[in-house]
Length: 325
Image (cartoon, rainbow, N blue to C red; front, side, top):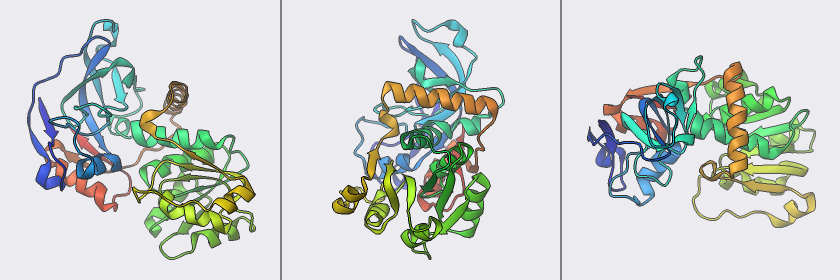
């Protein structure tokens, strides 16, 4: 099969190779998926750049979509021919979705509704599930004001749609007017240009000085210091799934204590079984109803995987980066 891989950390064009690898066979409890698409996420490029490979060779990417073409022992043969999307394809495994085939546990290949194409399927495992869990951790959002950092990003765009549909007033930080328009189209009531506006001041202005009821945050390193400036209302919730600074980030203890702010961290790769089931069920319903807009910002063939990684690293693409296989 055609596949891409790397064996050491480094720049995309220096370490990513494309060639032929053995086609995997599904083991007990596994399915093999003939992939049509592979999603490239920021975590994929960060791993390739700086996470020492845990295996001799890494076939990257956790997200993708395709059709089951073989099953292992214990998996019903009726799954053969099923259209699916994939989560955690390369998490703690050597082989992800940047290949024509992947074999993985049956539960990680989820039925894809007929009305959802394979490009959208490559956006679900990390972006959509992260968004769903982020909103879930806020609790009921109807009638509440929510801040979404990076509201036009892959995750933030889904968060904005989900929260707005649930009745929240969404404020979103954005980096350009094009991204502001993208966030507003998803349901953001107001956007904040973080490059030119003071986010904490603007939030207080938009909330009558109270602060937001909740945050779904992609960059704790930037947002955490604002907790000392009334960013979050008393008894609000700050949900965190990422940070641009990999080391420790200081939290202003006294302001958080006095306002009883709850800070919730989570990693979408390591959801509890209960949270995984809840997010999968919620996403299944949204996909069946056509509730979500999926934005594909750029598509590349597998032979141009280095360019796809570079597009994600540049951060200028509006929407998800997808590889066609």
